[in-house]
Image (cartoon, rainbow, N blue to C red; front, top):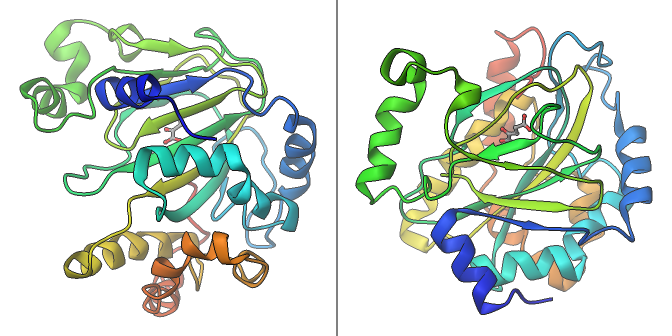
Length: 273
Ligand SMILES: O=C(O)CCC(=O)C(=O)O
């Protein structure tokens, strides 16, 4: 699947796009796999609704979920927005509790990073649907810079709570797919204690001279107590086509195990997000 020129321009302009019911034919098995992945690792406690529970990398945990990366619709989104040789950067599976304040997932000037989000429950603005600020991914614009300084102070500067900041609310039904640029400001309000979602992160392939930047990004995953960026199954079952999206990270995650060992000395459990 390739995105249309209009879909690509929409994404470039606003920093997000929704694909209604794109995976409706697969959502039953995906939801079943999601449920079976939790609680998952012995070092991650079962979700009790008091705080977010997160597993990273997520689609790596079970063989069938690995294949989402090969799905022509997911691969097509990546290839259309990032180029055929895009990198899979990892994934997270979550039971969210409550709200997620306004934030960006990154501040990337050189390489485009995107998130593909699967929400497994019907959500609207009153039950935790994702909100985005259109255009906020454009770091070169004065608007984007202004938001960087001001978003954390919405009540002080604008006299409004986070939930009233002007934004687009992306209501979802299971089977819908949301995609947003990591630079896009996003948040969620009014969610319950068991909001289920997982994401797949992709980015453009890094050039040789910027590989240290890629390694620095990968280093951030040590807080999830992982020794490699991908699971053994993800790597061992990869077709040549999937391998195109794995090989640059596989060649640059050699520092992760030592960083993880170091962090385990100071953390009581893997990071929750
Ligand atoms: O659904 C949410 O609460 C927000 C998700 C989010 O912040 C993210 O995936 O980066």
